[in-house]
Amino acid sequence: MEADVTEGLDIDVLAWGARAKARCDALGLPPYSEVEGQLTRRFLTPAHAAALTTLSEWMAAAGMSVRRDAAANLIGRYEGETPGAKALIIGSHIDSVRNGGRYDGPLGIMLGVDVVEALHRAGRRLPFAIEVVAFGDEEGSRFPASMSCSRAIVGSLDPSALAMKDADGVSVAQALAAFGGDPDAIAAAARRPEDVLAFLEAHIEQGPVLEAEGLALGVVTAIAAQKRLMVRIEGVAGHAGTTPMALRNDPAPAAAEAMLALERICRAGADGLVGTVGRMTALPGAFNVIPGAVEFSMDIRAETSATRDAAVEAVTAEIQAIADRRGLRAEITLMQVLAESPCDPSLMGLLEESLSDLSLPARRLPSGAGHDAMVMADLCPVAMLFIRCEGGISHNPAEAVSEADCALAAQAMLHFIDKLERRERA
Ligand code: GLV
Ligand code: MN
Ligand code: MN
Image (cartoon, rainbow, N blue to C red; front, side, top):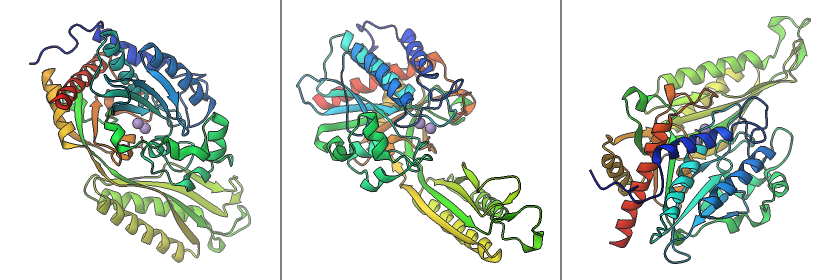
């Protein structure tokens, strides 16, 4: 076991884990949520703005200079020994799904703030800067695609993404301008690879593996490939009372068949293949109207793009066949593609050593959930630390983590920084 890296630092790590968790809890209600009694904090909403205001104060108190970029990322910078040094970026997302948990995203930010505060209080400067970033759009819970904030930092945000509209017809560009961002200056948010040393994201596991094995922390090996698709099946709207069953062109039963096909194909698949219909709408949407159209989303993921794409092809063919057989028209639109993203082997090694320093087994595991780290991997080497969560439950208000595990995560991150420092000085 190595020397305690927290020795000499003016911190009580246990209290510290408790504070990171408490800060996530504090951001779990209005004004940090759009909805009373639950946490819904979507990209570019007043709840997002309120969270950034409070987080800016916490970042400043931790010794960081704070700014917002054109894409609404909040960035706190703790300068290195030399002004303008390359940065280790630590971050995660501040947005949530509708009625989500409090730790999915924010916990990784709060732990980053704590790690910087510890260094700041000890007056310790490193051969690199540390930047803590709060990405605003990891979930894609307002607009159809996700991760526009990390894409802006990487310089890979397609300008067409700014034209995407939310359910009220507001575009990303309009919402961003109203938020104080600058849609015309998105390119300025891009970071140069030579200015970034690495990216570290701590995140709750959102699955049951660590808990089942009695482990507090895990080291992520890779993040699964994803595709988001929208399906629209069109028939003929009609009167629910007067149109005999045999004479209908009803897209709703076709949609039901399509969803069963998705389930069957994914159940039979390998490589962690999963498929989800998370949103569905019958139009115009009334008890007494046969719908003229049904729209639903499909989220399909697997450990490899090849497995994911084979499933997407199979489902697409099934949906066309179902529509043809029923005399309907099906249209499938690809909304988002994310390739599988391996974590950096050398940084994974440093994280494993950091867990060993804490006498913790270094369990390696893949991530089925998407993370900004998979986008950041196009800019710099990335590492991800997973934190056990209760029952593996996430995207649910019942999401829970322990203060002790948060404290261990913070310590592991400090060990990681220590090792990175030694590597950079060597
Ligand atoms: C985000 O949590 C995702 O995996 O879609
Ligand atoms: Mn999430
Ligand atoms: Mn997340």
